[in-house]
Length: 125
Image 1 (tube, rainbow, N blue to C red):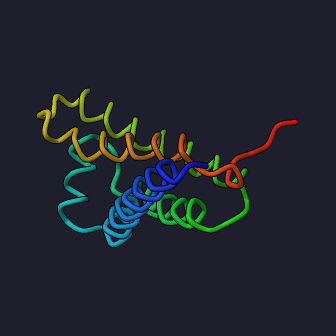
Image 2: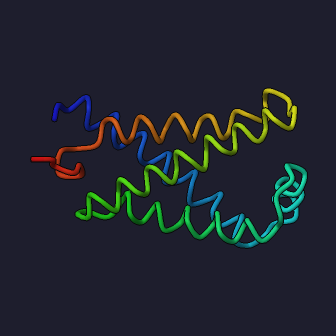
Image 3: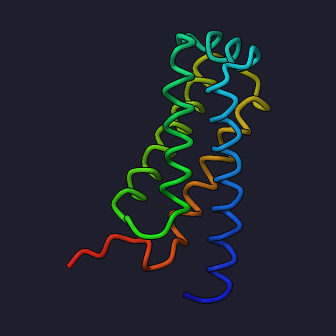
């Protein structure tokens, strides 16, 4: 892996982890603005507990060494959560600026996954 690719990987992964961890904590704490946000999109508030837990566990899976299969599942979960958030906002006719956080995390997920080091990939024989 080239130095450039390592830098891209760690920058994207660091920002992804920070974004997912911070939003996961906010969701687990059921901050009032977040409860209003998710109920406005048509989801029940208990969904925040599920999303927050998955995000925090996903961050741990992506950052800790080994367990490449678990990392794949974490990346898939991040991708589904953020593409779902983006689509939910589009379907709710939210303003474009409301799409940016989920689009940013979706983009960071794809970049981190694509540039991950070989020892963090599943090797198919």
